[in-house]
Length: 196
Image 1: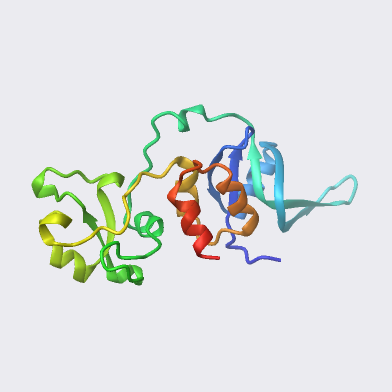
Image 2: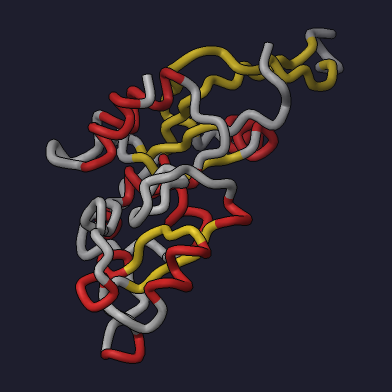
């Protein structure tokens, strides 16, 4: 049995990943009869009260992936995930994209490839993870101006990729489900393969 802090992946009825929910939120969805189907491994068996007539106790099984009624087509059209350092560092696997070393989040910073002072914008396609030393060295210059090589091209994650990046502890079955929704040429495929 998993610890109670394991996240449940919620999708729409068509299987489009929507968000991570706690086991409590998953139980509420089951209770409200909003769950169309579930898949993945059984995470929890939540026991409730006893039925006054039958004397039977209610038990709600909570799987790692639950699909809820409804569709969210708006997620597919022009989706721009919110940018935060936490998800940026996750996208770049906690690597400084200048020196190539891995760091703790407290030692990392958000670097604007084209600096804001030179007309750059604060967007997924213009930011990379950098250690504080490399970011200070680069300062308000482009990588070319600073004589630094960028190790990967920044990209904006799709909704499914963003859901993956937001996950705290993604289980193997949840990972396989999410990877099936990544674009074929997603840089995350290569990164996940190298982490095995």
